Image (cartoon, rainbow, N blue to C red):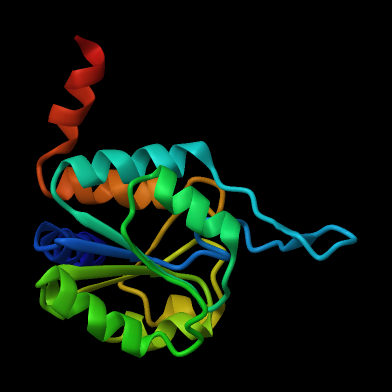
Length: 180
């Protein structure tokens, strides 16, 4: 019974969301960093995460990225997904978070954040719905309202997008566009 009540509270929080903030390394990627001999960095993004982001945005939920690291591949991937709110190189993510609230015109209660490591806690403790990926640091999981069943970079963001669309009653409409 307790688990059902907790899940219902999480669904109620998800119904209010107007902005989803994502960390990059460990959330949109599996957290591994690849460098060639010239120092070029490579990241791997899951295609289903990208499609989930596009579908969620079509339902009216804004998506933003706040990352502690700076990478050209992140900028390119986010641009390809139509994400305009990209904050990179912010180890202290609070300033970017506060700017986003003002820029998007939402309250912290209308925001979800997906994180995996300690750098994410300053935002996760301030949002309406704090989400940790399955393989997140134990302390991050402790402060999350909900944990995905999928690890970061392996479709966890898609799981979050689908969950939000289901909670807000949009998932069936989205699904039906592919069944016509």
